[in-house]
Length: 121
Image (tube, rainbow, N blue to C red; front, side, top):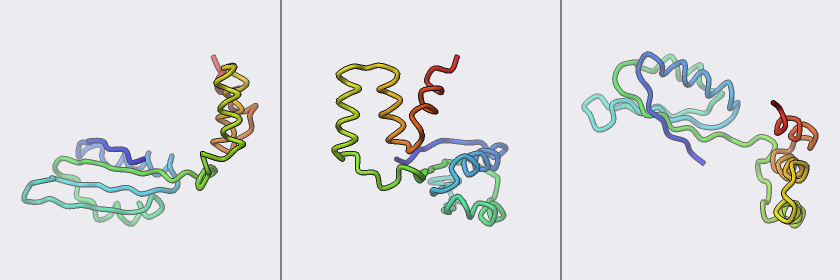
């Protein structure tokens, strides 16, 4: 999924710093002054942000598009029988434990970790 946002020239570098620190892998596009005389587009992978940052002109209006790469779940076959079974189990009896099992499998993290996050108060 690709996300789209708008940002000001004062905050553009900070936003992208945050994005690439959170999403270690993925792609980012920074479009500046779209449909105007000084339009420019900068496209890069998250790990290349330090190089791309040098060429970014921080004037004008910015549209930021980013597509995170999924680390542990990348290539996960959502239609797999095991995942279907977990989803059916959750839907038939929607308990926090069943939800934690399903989300843990999708995200590739331990069920207990997901359960603790869901029940954090």
